[in-house]
Every structure is written in structure tokens, then in C-alpha cells.
Length: 420
Image 1 (cartoon, helix red, strand yellow):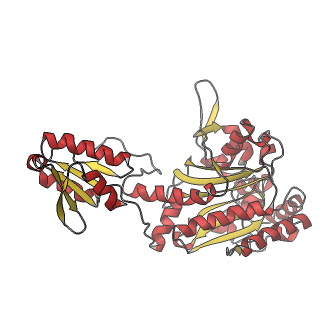
Image 2: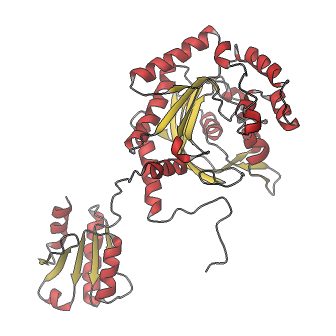
Image 3: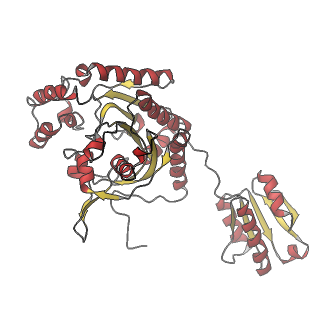
């Protein structure tokens, strides 16, 4: 038994379960690759200030959950708690917005880190796939991203998820709502930390999950009643485009994402089979984030979908993914000459794109065949000295149990033909 264990609130992805995570990542990424989104990968840590400015100094993520540290050189860095700020920073640094083809459409996949109380569906290390469309203000872009996320989930076989949709207004109409909300919150029985948060960003109080706070918010003013005409028209077009695409959603006037940078369109994907941690993904428009982190005005929109949460949603619905077999052919050599011959054949099969494995460690026939069974291979190739003297190997169909002699020089072509 190892002395070391994975840190609290983290997990290891181990076969065969890891194949499910890979399949989920691929399913989420596939619609993005088909829609003009290019892959981007950013460092696992960034300047603390990037997240403080972008995510928001009043958010739990920055004040309580971010893993921050100081380097030997005195730099203040943080493990990335989310992806958008990092992706936008990288796009600005590389001047992607100056190449003349806006929006810049990017997708990413990686691990993120937040210090919080571990529970099912909520980890300190978690995996997300995200997408960002940078540099264009267009309701069709907001709709596109929502539709692509819906397409990804449905391609996995999920059906019991809901899309919640709201508008958070913009710099024209939100200040009026902010003042009205602050006035309402000033009359509530809330603790000092929550009252301080209400002064910095009152919308964050609406996202407070504590029952003692939520039960006092029943009569809170709703942002939709304060939207300016431009925001109303923008939001209505997003709703119309999503509806026309056949994507169902629910208007949620109290939906507030837990990050300060969101404006106008905001949405969340929730799955009721996950209990209290029901959100499986979400996102929205963030038109002012570029300026917050020192860039030019670049209206943008994006989302992030949790791979861990999506896997839990699949399990809650009883959806079994059709995963490709990790091994199609398993070679069992009996003797040194057979080891040389079959190892060469396995190498040939792999070059042809056929998943092939080999019985390592000079096991006997019984032990090697157990390994062949465990591998899930459709075919097993067995060869001993007598077989090779006759110029053949034994090909066994692991499903039917049928076995036949095939010429050594024909075995690769025979397997390629059978596996198509």
C-alpha cells in the first residue's frame, strides 16, 4: 500500500472509468470543432490579479476558493479557478483580435482548482470543456453557443437536463437595478460578510445558496423589469433563435452566475438528478471583461461544461456510452520464436490503426488467455513452435469461441479484413 494518497477533494482518473471521461470531452468538443472553434491551451496558473480583476474581488472564488501562492521571485500566482479569464488573456497577448477575423472562436479543455468543501459533484480539482467567442456582439453568437452545448449533451444521450436563461442587462440599465437591489437588501437580516458583498456587487447576494438568505429574497426586484430597450431586444432575439432551433429553455429571472464579468445573456445547464449540485455547466456574455484586464473593448460570450458533472448526469440517467474497445487483437506467444514473430505482427497491426496488445512476461497459455479475456479483445492470435513449423498461427474469435489456423503471412490481412 502506498504511503501517499490523492489530496482531499481530488480524484484520479483510472481505466476503465477514464474512458468515459475521454468520451464526454470528445462529445462536447465535437460540435465546437465543426463550428469554427480552434483549440487553445493555457497554463495551469496565472497572475492572481487576472482573476481578481476578471472574476471579481467580491466573489467566493477569489475571496475564499482560489489557491494563491507567492513564487521564490515574489510573483503572486493562482491555480486557475476558471477558464475564461485565462483564454481571453492569451488571445489578447497573442493579438488574435487584430488578425481581422472576428469573432475569435476558441475551445479548451483542462483542469481547474477551487478550495471548497468536497462533496459529490463538487471537487477541489475538476475538469471542464469550454468555448469562447471573442470580439463580436451578436445575439446569434449567444444562441450558437447554447445550441452547441445542447447538441453536445444530446449526442451523449442525456435528456433530463434543463437550460435556464436570463439577461443581466448592460452598463446602461444595470446600475439602476443595482441601486434598487441594494435598497432592498439593506432591509434584510443578513450577516456582515453578506452585507459587505451587497455593497460591492449586490447581484452576488442573489446567488447565495444558503436557505436563510434565499427565503428573504422572494420579493427582491427582478432585473428583467429594469432592462433597457436595447437589452430587451437583444435578449428577445436570443430567445427566438434558440426556439427556432428547437432547443427548449426556461426563463429564470433570478439566475445570476457566480462571476462578476457577465453581462446580458446568462444561462445555466442543470440536471435534477444530481441533488444540490445540479449545475452541469453554464456561461454567458461578458462584454466588459477585456477592458477589465487591460485590453480593448471586445464584446464576447462563452461557456464551460463540467466533465465530472456530466459523467454524474449520465450515471443518474442510466446512460451507458458506447465506448470503443481498447484492444481488438491480443497476441499470445508460446516460446521465444513465437515472441519475435507475434511481436512483429502486433507492430504491423498497430501501424494499420488496429488496436493490438501482447502477452508480456513469458506467461503460460492459461495465464495469457486470462489476460486476453480481460483485455476485451475480439480476436486472440496464439502461436507455438509447432504452429510456426507449419507456417500458421491460431486465430480465435473470442465472441463465438471458434478457432482456425491462418498462415503467418496472411494473419495481418485476415484481421484487417475481419475488423473492417
